[in-house]
Image (cartoon, rainbow, N blue to C red; front, side, top):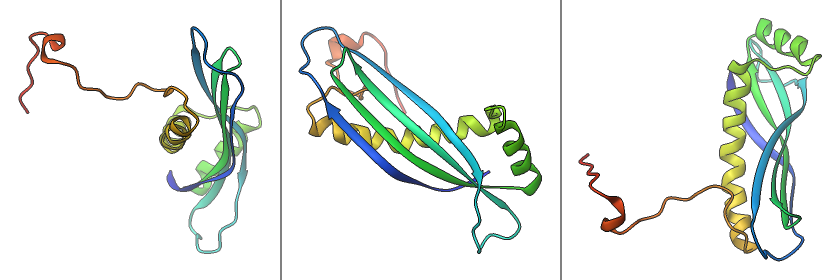
Length: 143
């Protein structure tokens, strides 16, 4: 599989209520559709279009970020037929699903962090931080 690229078709960010107490953040990736694509410059491989929806929810009813788009990826002809066949039962093999989801997470998480900063929301993933030496304990790292 060779990923050609990712395009966003819809990005929605909505802050519904102020943060008052305990906050729960959840995220979800959903492949909505897989279909054959035609690209003139690609002859030996079959491009597939994976439509996705990535959602980050701040509960209870605080905010929601939604990213919808698609990934174009190239496959060998026999492999693309097998993927389409499995998709009829809404199944994707792990060797395809895991790299796709990781690619979606990488692209969407970067955008989400920008919007969270602009909308005054806490980040949905922990960011690296520096701690005083006393909190680090005796752990030492020499690289």
